[in-house]
Every structure is written in C-alpha cells, then in structure tokens.
Length: 76
Image (cartoon, rainbow, N blue to C red):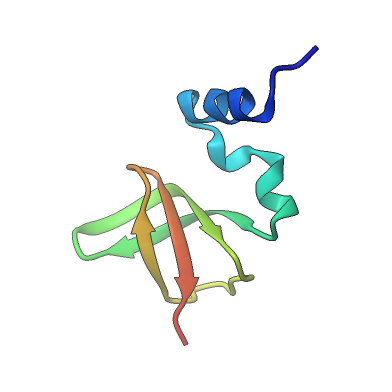
C-alpha cells in the first residue's frame, strides 16, 4: 500500500523530480523543457513550471528553484 501523499511528495523532492508530480497538472501547471538566454549566458535543458501556456520565444519573469528548474510567468 503506498504511503500518504506527503511521503510521496518528499520522495519527488529528494530525487529532483518534484516537477514531474502529477498533482501539478491537476492544479493547472504546465511543464516545459527549454533553452534560455540569461544575463550570464545561455542555459540549455532547463525546466520551466508555469500556470499559463507559453509561446515560442516568449519573454518570462522567473523565480529560480534550483540550477535547472524555474517557476515562470509570461511577460507581455
């Protein structure tokens, strides 16, 4: 029998896969794999978590969650 949801969530965080948790999709989040241009250069293979759909080459504001994962919002 699986553990309670809190234990499952902790498991995702410990394995750096918390963004792949299916509950994010149920809450309306979108997950993107992208490359981005930052002030200190290009970053490839980053993961973006967003509440809205993003278009190709769209500018975003972001909060860095770790080296490869960012929570973003589209900038209009």
